[in-house]
Length: 391
Image 1 (cartoon, one colour):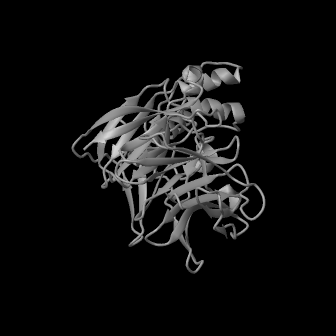
Image 2: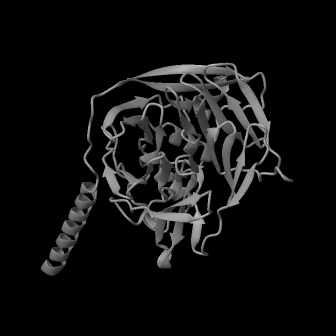
Image 3: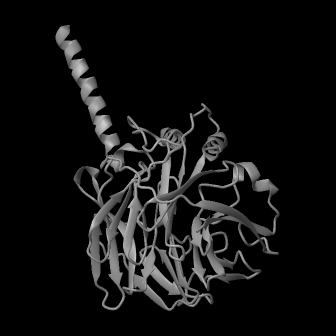
């Protein structure tokens, strides 16, 4: 009996030390002078019910210092919806599905460089188009090995990994994963040079908190990956660190992004979990979303959501309500990834299963939490808030 007790004590001690070491893998925060944030509401009157209340894919283009053009993918009619927070500008570009200008529906990636340079990704093809819907170029980026898979998507239960056009380097950036034996995954970013069709590979570091993200965390099993002209920026939904790769010298860096309000790590999903267990896990844990760079302000924005205790239910809609009650938080970093702001957002105003984006003055979120205020929004309007750092 004493030997059994000793073995149990050793196991508990090792488990405690292991958990403590994993917690210590989170970087400490660096802070700069705190800023204030102004929240301004914008209403766009569409006069047309074909425009949506929110969008799964959205990108913005700064026409000048005072005017943003928002470009969003309307999956219901396979179109690009264009509008502006500052004016009555509205346009809808219906995309062809077949022929020389055909783009297959259910687009997975969207990046707007200018209104004449809109990059769209779907089914291994990148399309270059404009606001007339004319396809100027089609590029097949799907020539990967059999164990590789491109991950360009915006999935708010799992991760967001974006397509990006880098004008300085005349190249496209996108993420991919390689499935190794025993279903271990390695994640990469590929840079596709448009001039000579060469491809460069950058390997992403695993999460410092836990490298086994694929098999242990339910839906939260893929990194968020975004870009600036100088950096690859990525993070993991399961923890608060921020990771970068410098494109000039390939150096890698890790920065702290611990929240003052919530847990900063996700619990493992134990056992042979099915769909409903993964849904419960999603409710009962935090989730860190992608890092959004604003080149006008030279600031980085990140959303994350809190955890809730799961209330037992057999109703899928009730589970959705529980998820949409989770607290939302916005954190802002300067160019050195020093924290300059963290604030709690209203839990019943914004959806966390639709897109957001950077705009000239800050960070845009659609106002349309379906479970709470969807019926209270006027039919022919698109409503969103812009969080404006006061700098």
